[in-house]
Image (cartoon, rainbow, N blue to C red; front, side, top):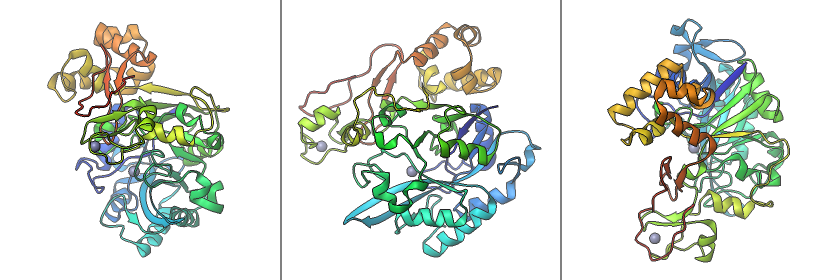
Length: 418
Ligand SMILES: [Zn+2]
Ligand SMILES: [Zn+2]
């Protein structure tokens, strides 16, 4: 069966996360989005882990379901994210890792090991001073079936390949345990195509998740598998990069991510990788170093030209969230009443957001939502849209109708748009 899975979410116990991110609300929104398997998030946090035990019960194949859901509704997979800040090779490194666990027992083992080494209570995404390699040891000691997946692998801060405090390779980060790293999460600011330019990633599976901090952001990226709802099947597909059963990933347009291009937000400077190189990665306004985004970093580490298709690659489908599509079609803000009301009507009638974005044909969408929304979905599916790239923590901006906007800018430098 087709399963849509979003493996990276956060609970209300993580910093800067909505108070609404509880297991029942996550389940409710997974249903609205059309997500079949969703991460619990934050299993390292004692209060959230207590809620997992209290509110969930085992379903099939090592997955869980809400007790009050009577076996219906989305399945939960035990997940967490951990931050490691440590020194390695004479430099400070900062990275985030996504953890997947096969059972409550495995989580208990991990949590008691982690609880001895640092504070797991203060943040749903705990911070430790030991290395990512040591974290991997703890994860594998708890269960050989557990997985560590470097999270949003390219963001400048807090990622394995980040320009600020990352590594140049998986081997450099994980040493003799590197063979246990079978996948990376591409993150919102990069897409699989960009990652295909690194031959070092040919045997690594690229997964995509929302990293949602609020309910409506669930599923903005996701993985689509053809398998039974089962922890071992899902992780087996990820481990072996099984292109028969990993149908595709759902991707944000990477330009829309917060760190796609280089720049300095305070000074309104946005550069493509070439422009940034020409400026020696220095802000022309304040002379501080630019925040080097994902595109430049891929450029630095890649050994293949743009457009190269890696052998055994899993396909990807670029998407724009339905709220943004409606906002464009109606020419009002995504939080407006008009968009919110129509969002609820459409997802109810179609069954879910993914039913509209991924499955429905355009004529059917036109009948349900009108010609303009149908045209917008068609344009998003074919990539016929304008985008101002995100940079230095600022999200990119999508224009489905009309051209991309000139970004706000005070600097003297010329800025070239897509
Ligand atoms: Zn993270
Ligand atoms: Zn500046």
